[in-house]
Amino acid sequence: MMPLVFLLSLTDPSMLSTLDAINYSPEEGVFVANSLIYRYNPATTPDGLRGEEDTFNICTFWLV
Image (cartoon, rainbow, N blue to C red; front, top):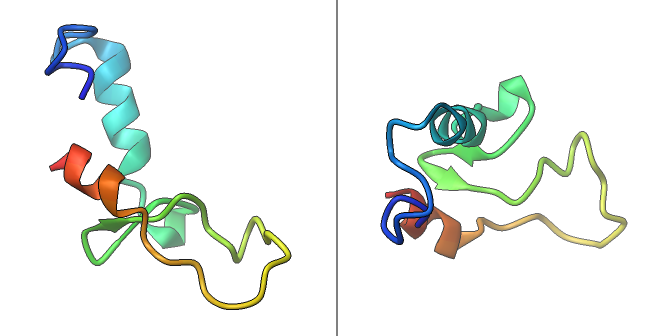
């Protein structure tokens, strides 16, 4: 969203590092599995709630 509203350029180093951080695999600690984004990794950051953590779909659409 940031490049679309001209907040940052797509080639800005902070934007590129943000994309790199979002695209870490669960094995690396967070966020993307099966091309879907999670808000956090419940295995490393338990939230105390029962059940499984689902994907954060709006963020997946924004990343696309």
